[in-house]
Image 1: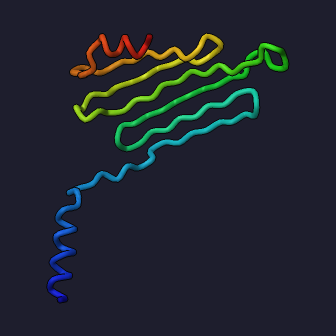
Image 2: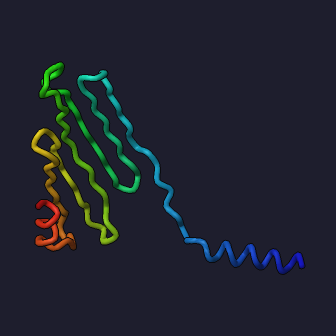
Image 3: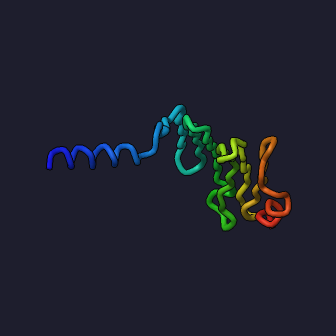
Length: 115
């Protein structure tokens, strides 16, 4: 019975992904100045990055809103870096999608995401 349990654990261990990647936080910056503005940046060891800044516009008025701009990127399974830069304000969410050399998203698909 003990030998059977040992073999089961060995089989489970062998079936587990080999060399799993442990993603580490390389950078984490945050600046929250209160209700008027904020910014943050995160960078991970797998190549994922995100940055964003937001600012309150027309504070105290009927037209008060927040304006946000930022970007995020990641390394796809094909090894290509994909980046989405955006602005979000009173005109809605306005993304711009970029892909590094060898990117596999057809331009027509990107255009359909952008509206």
